[in-house]
Structures are given as C-alpha cells and as structure tokens.
Figure 1 (cartoon, rainbow, N blue to C red):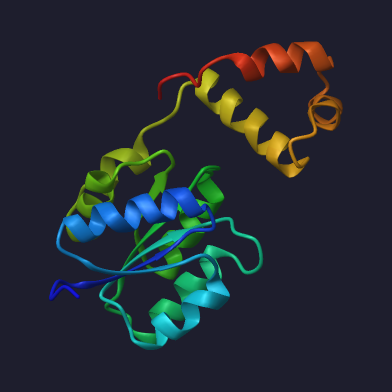
Figure 2: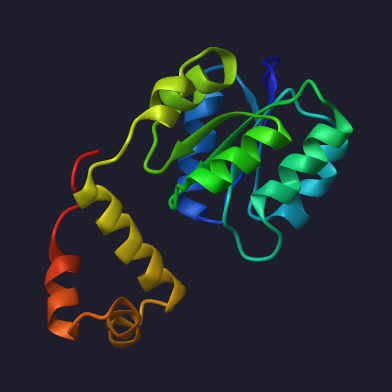
Length: 174
C-alpha cells in the first residue's frame, strides 16, 4: 500500500481501468479501481482526494458519481473521461465540480496534469476536426446499436457497405 494521495478510478472498460490504475500507481497515487458507480460507493464514503470517472457506464452515469463525490467532500478533484465528448456533458460535468473533461483515448500524464494542475484546459477547448467528429459520431451510433452495422447504417442514413468502409479506416487525428 502506498502513502500517496488517494485516487478513485471508475470505468467499465476492464482493460483500460486496469492499465490506468497501474499507471497512476506508478505515479505515486494510492488507487482504488471500480467497474461501476454502484461498486464505487464504498470508496466514495472514504472521500478520496482525487477521482477519474468515466461518463457513460452501464447502470448509473458518471455524472451521478461526480455529484456523490462532491456531496461527500467538495475538495475532491475529479476528472471526467468520455469516449463521446459533447459540449452539454462538459458543461454539466463542470457545473458538478469536475476540474477536467477529457476524451478517450487519453494517457495517464494528461490525467495527472488535469488533476493537479491546469493541464485539462487545452484539451477541453481543443476543437476536433470535422473528420474526427464524424468518426466519433459513427462509433457512438454503432455502440448504441450494440455493434450491429446494419442497424447503425439505417440510423445514419448510409448504405451498409459505405458504413463498413468508414469503419475500416483509422480514426483521424484530433
């Protein structure tokens, strides 16, 4: 057990959560990692100094967890992570007290900068390119359709083969 500042990581992506917890432990934090808001509530009761919370998870939202963290201890510094960044959720997270709103993929150093300094500001205000916004939207719709390409194509108004070609491409840089 480390003597570093306490940090709560809540994300439903097992591989991402484990890698992030390991990376933050290596940077001196005492990390508690949970897969859901419900599983994180006992750790919230201990009022961690820092928190890294995923926005969209099965069950309760990361915004609900952020509100619970701030209700327990207003000094908790929290960063909201999301694969589906949008202005309304960024505003809501900020109103609830998040010190940063970062889109995935994100590295541990950017999270640490957001938690302890002003590193989140540049990433929050950075406007994605139109190609990047389209790529993120297509993947969000695909996730909402449980990876069913035919249903996603119908919702997007695209031919299924056109959507498959778009899905084969790498994500555009910011």
